Length: 471
Image 1 (tube, rainbow, N blue to C red):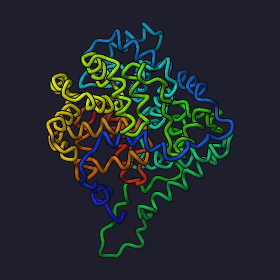
Image 2 (image 1 turned 120 degrees about the vertical axis):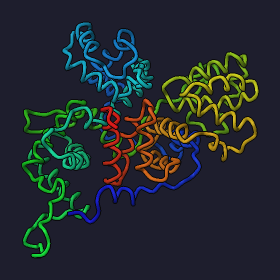
Image 3 (image 1 turned 45 degrees about the vertical axis):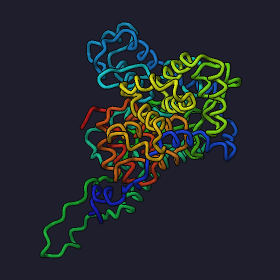
Image 4 (image 1 turned 135 degrees about the vertical axis):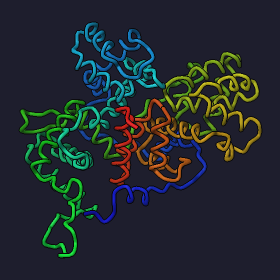
């Protein structure tokens, strides 16, 4: 039995501090906080980013081909790749329908394809795939974080046991990295069983013993998953290793041993160090396009960034500069969307008409409403009051996507404080129904970063429900 039902424990432990959401400040901290300490050096022997990106491109080659085919050939109006479209893609790309379906799922998880309502569109990573190594590595890390969604779990195993194994996998990955070579599967199984036992002990789950029952008490029902012993953990270990191998994180030697790939070794180091790699700021921001200028200013604090915006704007006509900034804001990189509206704040009155016009676009509406509220004299601290609950939730997910793409895990956890909902269950309910195209990736990243096992499991469950189209 358990000392507290999981749902009750989640409800009691999931209170969020109700603070005013400051999405742009959160997104900017995603990149500016890195200026306070030097970036840790990767372990000796770690491949350079260009080589890691080459390997990541190889892992996701089929997903990229399918995403590019879908961007041109598939019928619009459906978020899923229906059977007719799968057959056409298989014929065009010389793949089996099963390979097409798997590649489509991987493309979604890696951010190569994003869902906008009932329509799937190419993600910004797809457009940057051939020229931006950091975008490639971030796409692969998103797939790595979602390995448990990339390969279905065994159907005959209780979901609680699956969740326990997913929670224990980081321990296995740490052992693989520390070993710097092959690790026998029996050793991994021993560690997995030990970690699962520790997780159950932490949750106060005790073995069922009918002799401890008083005569007047009906026979107790063993807790869900309490009968999961070594026999049941072994196939789940096989599933976990195959799932990690399927995303390119490790290799298996005929089921006898497992070894981290260079990509897997690098990803585990990144997770352990709690850092994210970001693209280097380009030089000569004033001469760059709006997108490159914003990327170059991303690591600046607000004061120097505004000076860069002013210099960039001075070299262009107002109309062309505003149009270019709004074009960037319509892209899929949420950090650039927020920065584009920061640059528009420097423009001021000449941008009012264009900003009012884009308030009708769902992706830009929350940003436009905040811009207009501040332009009309509202205190920036009070500006979020103009957003509806749905708009505030959409903006929270969009900002979380920026943090997940460009920030550190701890910042993603702190971003929870800016949610308008009072509890994490309420937040998950509204996030799942919000329809943001990055919802799955945000939830997976949040689950990977959260230290509370119960909350992390609930967030992973919500990510799975969104990924599979569940309620």
